[in-house]
Image (cartoon, rainbow, N blue to C red):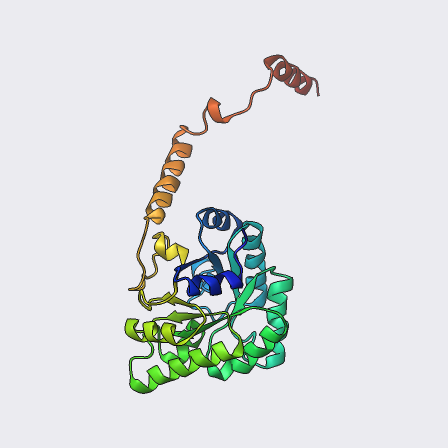
Length: 281
């Protein structure tokens, strides 16, 4: 059955962990969905792992809509959450609602996610009032990488920790159905998870969160530019793919592929007639 935001709330109440993985295309979405994962996040991380950007800042609304459409086509059960890209909501509450609406109407997502805390609570509230489910995202927010001076753990000082707590409570009050906590100290993330009634989804925030999310290229060993500390690699798919591409190249060059097994036949008499026809031309 299709997972909904109501299921997220029920899972938190029942103490059932929520699983979320990023996805950006139809084929991968089908694989993720068939595995029983609760939610697929069409993250703006696609800018780095799919499009080769150095960060997420260059990602556009058109990028997000395009990839969301593909993921939705390959998904039957998981809740598809789509990131709102940089400057699609920061400019005004109006822009936030309009662009969230585009991700739902054109991208066919089941919910949207935006970065930031209480400074965007009115944006979240307005989007929710437009009947669009919103997932918050606080801690290390990649769209703010230039402000943070890099990808760094957030909330390690007293003031920073207070800010994260206030942000989480503000997002809950604004109507967010869940909050992603990224690169937050484990004990602080666990405390925030206990404070709010909505689920927390951790990424580099420890086991005390109500769920976890990872970028699938990271967990599959497919993204070699760098591997964050919080990533556990469940497979070395990148190595498997590299060896397959290498073997394919070698077999094509040597003539070992394709063989008769991979080819289609035509009656020899038809070929003789074709050749005779060409000789008469």
